[in-house]
Image (cartoon, rainbow, N blue to C red; front, side, top):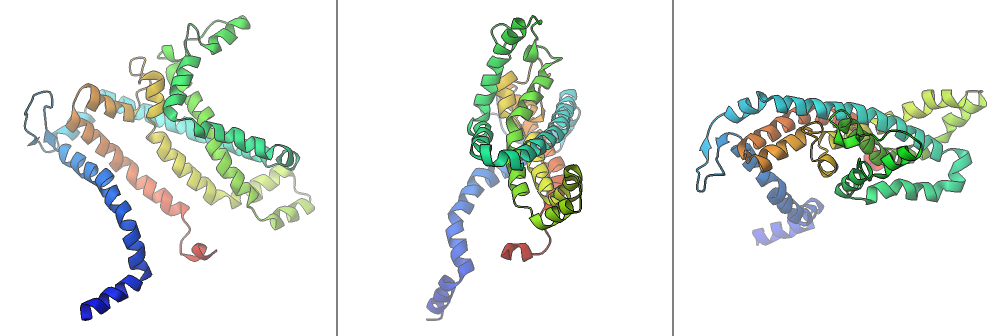
Length: 307
């Protein structure tokens, strides 16, 4: 009887019911993410020659980590990832702010509101792999439309992604053009949700639109910029699909970011333990600043949950 009574009390508990409904998702996440994560951590401390049938998996300590950290291509890939992120993130924030301000202005918001949202949603509907393939065709040296347009105006064709000197810059341009719309849509929502009382008061006091923007609107959206910055920072650092579809990390290694280096190390050279070690180095370096920025972005306390 006591067990039945406790079971009834447990079934009436909202937290227990929530845990019961969440348990299938938790189990699926553990199978899909937690087990591969733990297995890759174990593999990173082992030696395993997968090219030899029946080769045993043997513990090797931190030898894989030493090998990865001593590889020049690892550090050059880290440098390209940092360049890719540090150039694309400010550009997307600035351009996204300009687009959001333009589309929420009183002159345009009433006329082009629906059309602007449709246009901003288009890049989000195209898979990144398809984006990479389309831009690879656009940048084609021989029959690409960009070089055809340059030839129409009497300009010399450009190598774009066919040259190591311009490949990374071409990839950066595609990244900025593709994902600025995400930033713009989030900032548009933030601008439209701002309280109008301080803005109207500043306008009545004779403040210029630029001063209202710099001293009222942007400070009130500081937490939103931090959230957008964290999201885009993590996305940029782990970008892989569209770069690989566009350039395959080439020419040579000119667009080989850290993610592409890890994939090449594992899939092309079959160095699975070293690839696992490189992945964990990436995770260990990325996790602390991400947690710090997320804690800064989320308001302290739980009062905001009741708003």
